[in-house]
Amino acid sequence: MSLSENEQLVTKFGGPFINCIGMVDKYLRQVLLPRGSGKRWEGVTKAAVLLRLLDSHTMAMDGSQSPTSLLTGTPADLLPPPVISTRGCPFGGIVRVPVQDAKDLPQLIECFNRYGVRKEMNEGYVSYLLDPGNPQFQGWDSFVFVTKDGELRQIWGYQNKEADQGPEDRKPTIERALEALGNEGLLDGLEIHTVWLQGDAPTSFATPTAAAKQAARQDKTKRITSRARRCTILLSRL
Image (cartoon, rainbow, N blue to C red):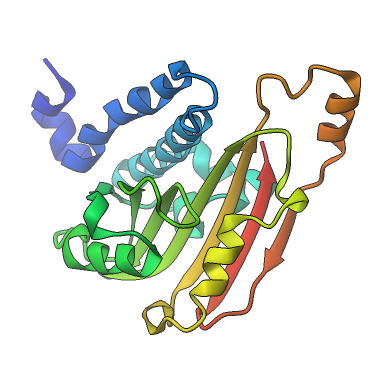
């Protein structure tokens, strides 16, 4: 019997939760893709974020203590506060946006508001994982959207890089994308957070010099002024 056929699990945790468990394995299998494809580390980070969303959902559904609620420091800063709260946060599922429907963040917000919000989950906080289908999507690789009482309130965009060159060495595309959104009224009243998730490339530690340089790099947070209520770029080396 598959998980989706288990009525007891579906009743307790909901269809979106059951349907998305298998996506963790799918994302992790991206590490088998050729090096340089740009998808290897992206799959790992998506799987990690999705696991946290699912974990928080189980706590919201049955009241059990969640490892996600025990996160502190930088790991906690990488996720929306409702997700790491002791109450947990219901998960609305993965929203996949067709390539032609969204090429930037404002278009993605419009698509989400039009058909991404689950009408039956319109009380309190609900998290969603968004996977833009456009390979040329500006600035981010994936998102966590958080609604409150059915309305979008928080956007967490994730930029994933597998390299030994940090964002301090070059102007990140996420920063340019946020600056370009300064006059978009669609962003008014939203909290926008951008997280740079950098993993070590397979050759990062090929020499002692490279290893020392990587270890010396510091995480940092940078704020950008815009019309959104709060715009944050969190640059994190994992």
